[in-house]
Length: 91
View: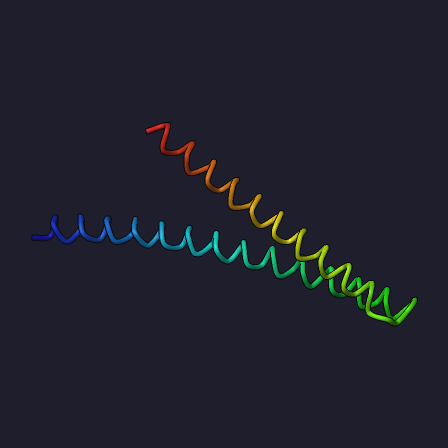
């Protein structure tokens, strides 16, 4: 009875570790994308405020922030997939 309980706890702890890894990947992706968009938007806002004040630079840098965020986010996801594939091939 005690051994069966220990085996269940080991399985549950492995499931929790996998769950936290997946949650970490999703959180990292979201933070990466949102921070790139925010930085692009802030740069565009302050450059626009400092120069022309017609919202063109805000739009340009916001689009660049979105593109940069998606690029870096997808790159992050691809690294995680390669890492998982490497672990599976070893076993």
